[in-house]
Amino acid sequence: MSRNGRARRTTDCTAAAGPRPRARSLHERRRADRGEQAFVIGILTSEADFERARAWQLSDAPDYDHYLRDTAELLTEARRRFRTVRARMFHPQDFEEFCLLHGVDPAEPAARDRYLVNPPLQTQLLAYQGEELTGDFLPRLARARENGLTLRHADLLLDGGLYAEGPAGTGGADGVAGADGGAGTDAAGAVQARSVREAYQRGAEVFRRMLVGAGCGVYELRVAVDAPGGRLSAAARVLQWEDGVVRINDEDLELVCAVLCAGLARELPGLAVLHGSQGSAAACGEYRPIAWAWASGGQDWAPTAAAVRLDGVPAEPGFSLGTVC
Image 1 (cartoon, rainbow, N blue to C red):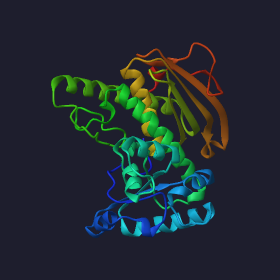
Image 2 (cartoon, one colour; image 1 turned 45 degrees about the vertical axis):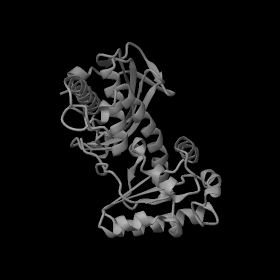
Image 3 (cartoon, helix red, strand yellow; image 1 turned 180 degrees about the vertical axis):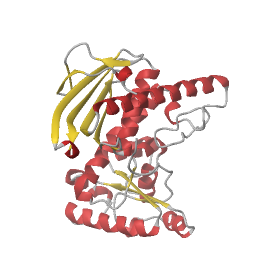
Image 4 (tube, rainbow, N blue to C red; image 1 turned 90 degrees about the vertical axis):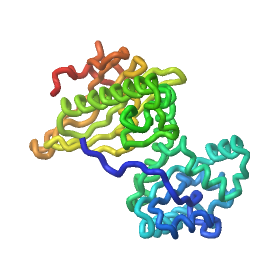
């Protein structure tokens, strides 16, 4: 299964919510001068967020359109100077709560830097590779925030095992190491990490079998697992060619596998629906709408006993995953 993008890395340089050169810290410039190869920026993804953040003077832009143009220029400059450029949604409410929790002034650039590189929020980062901000990238940033919150929820359910470092942990879909990195330091931790890793591999195999059985086409997979603290949900858009090559956003693949992993590891009930158009241009342009559903009682995934509806999408019982190689 192929994916887009690159593995996440810990960021080294920060810019606060957009281009405001005089607000950049000396810390950032020193890091750049030493040849550090990563850069992270927070981006306001809506006009409403832009207006709400005016009080913090994140940008000198007179309006949101100018802000986006200035931000695009800063990203272009960053891609010339740094090997890796990453972005995340700058969410005003999240930022306010972060500043309140840590007792910092939201108007200070250092507060924004700390917010952007806060370890629990690293799952919200996306690699920036020159995309148009006004295209799909801003919605992806907004989805990445929601995905990141779900990933943290799943990680808590797994006692931190989702991002445990080393062979005992999964390392996540992108090989992300946890902050503690100590899952394998004692026997109990090693057993827990191994259990999570096996559940992650089982979840990834469930997803693979769904796609292989569906064949070429354009699909969306929705997964929901009933968990303590609220439902874990994931959605991924998938394009699969005749030769089996799959195109899916890295962050969507990571989220689907994490939700499946949490469900299997904690033996939680769940529901999954794969829907879309099956077929390809190579098959004389013939496409067939499909919508298949599977359910899990916590141990494994099997076709639902009857037609179901998930997030408003109706689906018929899917094929047996055990028949797929």
